[in-house]
Amino acid sequence: MTYRRPVPRKDQVSKADKRSDAEDLVAAFLARGGAIKEMPAVEATTFTCKTCGHTGIIGMAPGKKVRCPKCRELLT
Image (cartoon, rainbow, N blue to C red; front, side, top):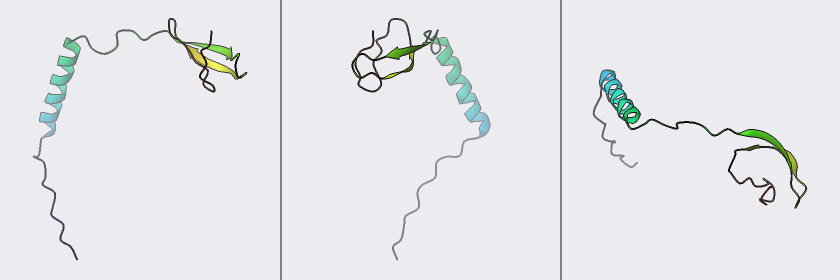
């Protein structure tokens, strides 16, 4: 039988300390501008691929290139 060395424990941190650390991190994150300002508008659009004939519905955002999920050809 082999002896397994115990894994050293981490220092115990109270819930109040964790909460205050999380609040500080959120405040710093929001002070830098926060997350995504505005999500791009994605519209569900039906498509038919001219190369492989695959048809379906795909989400298209304005200004983005969309490819066929089957053959990866650029959809126009």
